[in-house]
Length: 143
Figure 1 (cartoon, rainbow, N blue to C red):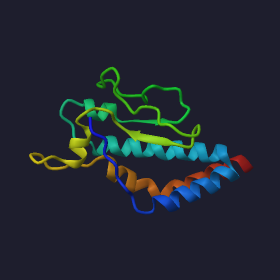
Figure 2: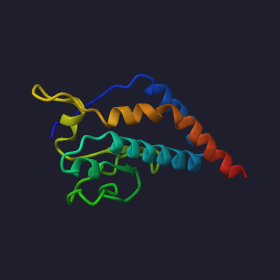
Figure 3: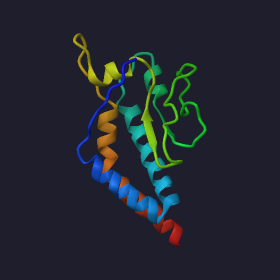
Figure 4: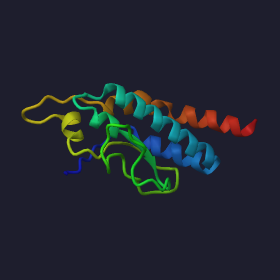
């Protein structure tokens, strides 16, 4: 399976914000990132094209330090489906996606098939909520 690298505008600013929150309140940052990851997963599953249901069932959330070989997947996922644990500082890297081989073809299309994006729209729907969610989690720690 080919790796696809994508550059998202504003990612550097988001990384700087997360670095700031990570220093200020690391547990709130971890919880906030996981919550947003799960929201992205839910929306991606709603947007995902469905034939057999395997792709949708394989979309999962995983984070650095989770200890999960793959994220939790649905009933129609096959053994080994799901998002592998990403590298990085424990809880500070959250990944949402699938490792099903045809996932990128659905997302980006091919010369014979039109793209049917499901991950990008989900990410862009929630990317702006990351700082707000971390702040909500910080407020919980203060109470």
